[in-house]
Image (cartoon, rainbow, N blue to C red; front, side):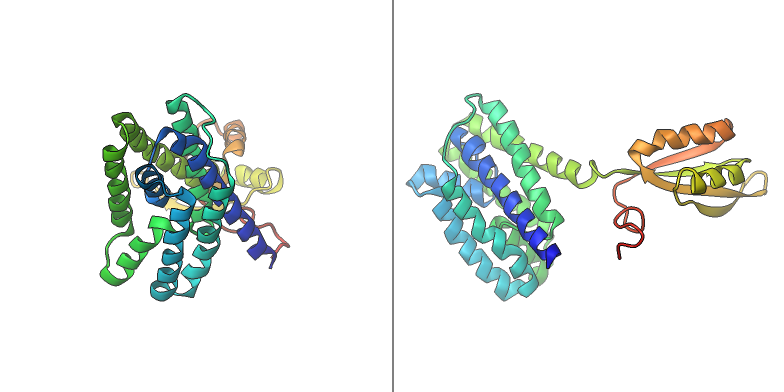
Length: 279
């Protein structure tokens, strides 16, 4: 129950970020950066239709399609964001917060990327153009990224005929910034380091890491191709902030130690996604 409530709160927060991005930063400068919100901004300029009403009508159709074609799970993951987005878009003023279009586009795009990243992390959606590609994938085996690309491209190209050329290029840059923001939030904030250590002082290093550093170690038997000598390779996964400390520890025991470090974007398990005694 607590987990479900937390998920609902995060979906509402993420959807609010989307609405803030559109109403305060992108739409005031006629930046239609793809998706349903971008399409709504274009229709508002062309026909005078309120963007929140457009989002509401389309999302109601999207919710029905999700239930019919994708099942209850996708429906429940979509309905909260899809229903809340037009409501919050209608409540947030349609104001130009920043006069500078470039700065407004950057801030709006980062906010939009943050909102979408939170939704993706919670397997949720705000409806819009994210659902039709899933239907195409299920029934016609068309990659969802292709469907999203086509819909975003259509919206951006349509903006070229409605707004000025500057807005068209701002929309393209906005999509790029949104993608970079989502990518960074997905893998950049929670990065870990996986370190492989070959050392003649491996027993001393293991003892320190287990009892002083309080970090688990995996021992991997390896054989040198040239020497044919069997030895131990240690594998340690730890947070980026502890990485330099680990290197210093190894260096104290063996300055000739051979160390390989990989950046790890996601780790699940004891000590990372939960602590002992919490399950």
